[in-house]
Image 1: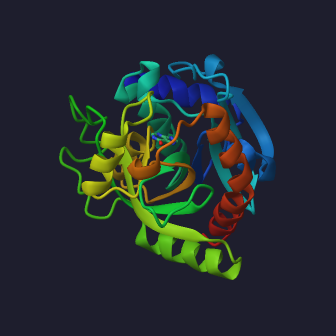
Image 2: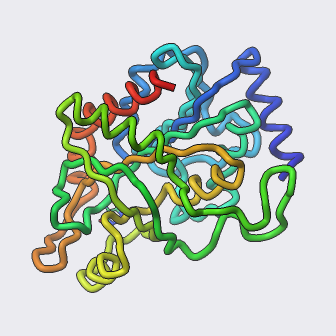
Length: 271
Ligand code: HPA
């Protein structure tokens, strides 16, 4: 991987005239709008970057954006990669490794997720304060390069407590309803059955989704502080579960996006 990473980073540096991002951002399903707040300096298609996996989803545009957000130099993934698309965990998290090699020292992640907690309604935001990984493998499986991180990274606080506290204060000031909770990651791409939603709730989940945890594990492996936030796009309440479509998920994400963008953008300006 070291050789591939070197090649990728050299390409990106060449194409962006050595742009040095401080903050990495991964934008989830229906949540690409934060990009509109970025003063874009460079934009690279995943398909042109050596060793970068290509997003196979038509609603994920697959671009790496470089620019300035509230005075901070950022790199943003518009369109993330999921395990269900067929990539390995190492491929999904390769861009996070590249971000670190480019100089990123803080990672922001957003996603769309289903609510499991009956107090958390469709359209609400949830800051992730812990996770349960139900995806079938860790991105750290296999050879460990000690230059990248430890063999057995600590996971006692994978989401920065400091960033969560600042974000909660921003939410209160802006009168944005924002919960905190545990995100369970599953493989997908199917949504859950009633019995599965019930199980995920019983094991301690507040929200369920198909992403985020691999990126968070790799960021922790490299000692990068993480902030992650979910837009709750549907309610996985087993008692009253009704069918949900991708269109509804995208529509709900779109509606909640301005509030999420406000929190992320203000949070970044405090760093
Ligand atoms: N389950 C899994 N992933 C999701 C959901 C869900 O209900 N909603 C959005 N992503």
